[in-house]
Length: 441
Image (spheres, rainbow, N blue to C red):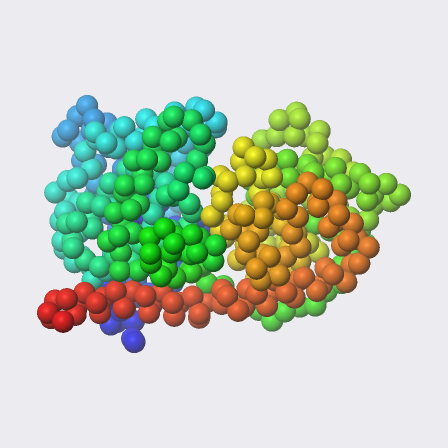
């Protein structure tokens, strides 16, 4: 099919699409699409800056907040791709970004509840939004499912208004109670959210999910036959390498939801392995600020925290590494928080052609994936961390062996052409089913 003949797709998301940022999964999805046959509605004041789409509608969260008291405020408008760094030049965008990035823990949880209240009573269902939806007249809606009630409410409205076929996409466990904290507020929020998630999935022609484990669970819950979809990867030829002396491990990412304790367990294991000399090291690059306890437990025995990197620097550092580290929490409190998530970091690691060392509970989607395809050295308990690291130090050939396994797994399951074909076929089939209904078939 020629790109000029692709179905028109309306995507309803939280963030504006901006190339060359860490939030790029959907951008990678639609790189194969005709940018004139796609439109995006999103709920931020940030301006878009991308090559994959040319038509956008922004519902400003700050404006929605003000509209609770002043109904005459314009909350949504059509916007266009920017040629400058719009976050720096957009006060509303900077304010939105600051509100939710400056707070953690219970304060952030309280802000999230306040956000839901604002969107419940604020003005976002406007004539401007309706005109944009009707004027674009999409053939298919692409609906990513988020862990927020207000996005579910907006998406339900658009689904109901257009009566167009829906392809939904679920990249986390946003339905079961397994991944939420067992406090009354979280349970009530999940109870309400589930109604919108169920509505979206039941009104979808096809559900897409991000990992095999998620497919198995959600197919069982909703009696569907979902499709596994991740961002596509362009692979260079595999480059063989020999582990250094010492072996160099690298972690780039956040330390939140208990991940830092998994990294601290690596540092602890290094105490025995490196007792008679440095045989293995770990460099941690993160944008997070460290507490005194974290600083003490992470900077020891050949493990050290180096600070933040740009995206380009991350690539350079990973290229020089022998082993890339992927961690989730082993703590009971956080074990299920990212239970069915599948970080874009995983596909990036698979592309790198490096050995992957992964820590996490055996029942979470990333560890299930690595074990299912034997594509990483995994540790599913604190005791196994030292055991698996010692094995790698004593048999360094395993580093190259698992590097090749990771690369081959990536090519088989995430190569861009394969992912593009899945997306195009799924959306085209949804469009054809709608045409069949329209023709009375």
